Length: 371
Image 1 (cartoon, rainbow, N blue to C red):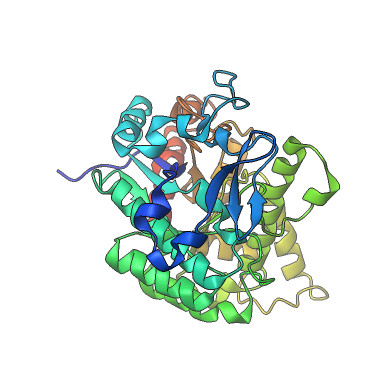
Image 2 (cartoon, rainbow, N blue to C red):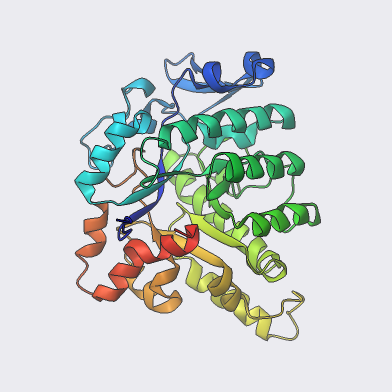
């Protein structure tokens, strides 16, 4: 019997094993692979091309699911002590079953730093190693665990090659990019044209996913000192700019079959953002966009957005953009994730109709990932 997908985690995470590059990376690049080090303050961080990356708290907290509720201390954890299902697919299935989740689409943890690599060839080798490992992680449960490929956007040609490999050789349905600019280029840059053409050709979903302190340009974080403030700003504001690039600057208009998801940045900002774009589209004095339809119509055709299960505006936005355009995520096993209980947080909302809940819990992700 074919599996039914009623509850889909649209943005879960894996924890890459510390020996992943030793086992999966092209030997010619292995010496230069990212390495986890213990920094001078005793915290684990990532060493890439001579740069040390990671927050004040270090990378030990990446598997600290439960820290949000205070059940786990993300101050003292070591990376290898992270939630077992991050490393091990068999343990992951047990955790999915605890929450009644039918399928999870999986994004990286350490791999979110890949955008910081300067050398395009090294970036391509890192992404290839990660994608090969991820395919092996998902392999025991091909109808429940779905890997989302890392794409080395440092070189558009390399990103296209990796996308073809992920789709045709590994059977992956989508890839992810950071919303931040690679090489100073936004997603609508003319150089990206062959990339978006190939996204359409391969019927590949593109999830945009920010990461904290990831060594890429991040808008607004330089104006604040605290980790909380920077996390609030970086994810949402970078995603707003990426949405501007995809919608107002014409990616969705020029490539009508492209599917783009705005992930892990909250969802409430999308309504006023689309309203503001629409207002400028309708204003002849401002509309220099050359778009063939209103920005909100482009969003409806090409885009999805992920909400955190606790967001207060979820019910309002479900009415506004349609529940079939909404994704949700556990963010498992990250410290700010929702486990156990994320689907219940949505299912228990009295203000949502049963049909709206059905669309949010599964319909949006089925449409975005073509499941």
